[in-house]
Image (cartoon, rainbow, N blue to C red; front, side, top):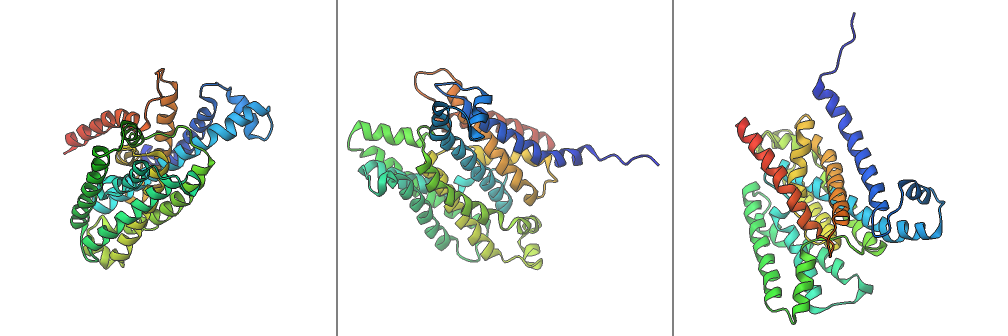
Length: 338
């Protein structure tokens, strides 16, 4: 009796997670080796192994490792958030910013920049960014209510996003001097330049807690794909699920925006890239989306350092340039399917 061969789709699913992990690890090593002072991959691996010279250790561990860790972590939470949002709202265009969390977090950081606040040992901007994202959750819960569906949640998110966006525009309009306005605009374009382990310490707890809360209801997302009534029949507590999702989104995205600024398109396109390689159940796209987000943002951050420019490109600009063509390609592909 001949051997049973696995279908091609099953083989792709089996290799998806290991491939993404290897890609993330490889890009992380390249990120540690790339910069104004190039290092060989072997030299980087020697430092990571606890050996190597003092100069290479300082460059890798003190200067580049925090940036690389943040690229992986921020990318992961953006990709995971996008997959959760698309699964919960049953909308392929959903992303973390659709509920206003990104704008609310950005407004908190803009307030720190506008007033030149510098308490808490230089951690003021990240802390206010996280506080802004969490504060944006309060009106969202009050407007949406306990029994509101996805449409009410989206409309409430639009209101929060518009209000936070108006606050950002107001800060730019009344900036006390041109330098403050330029600093705000530069931060809003997103970057991981000159990040330290202090930023990692601020972002890591938020990213971890946010990821746990977002991934908590993977099976409930599968049930919700059948409709809210079917999900309730299957025992899903929709209000509790929505509360966990919103809290995870606010904490996770708040921590990401706190250290990277506003970065778009990662949460939108990554689930579209990985979903065809899964069984298309919402829960099966969560981990691949997190890993895919880490891969995409680390690759984008690597790109901003190798493109020869007088000033380093902004990470949010690069993700938009990379994301729009990919998204349009998949949109046209889906349209042909329709």
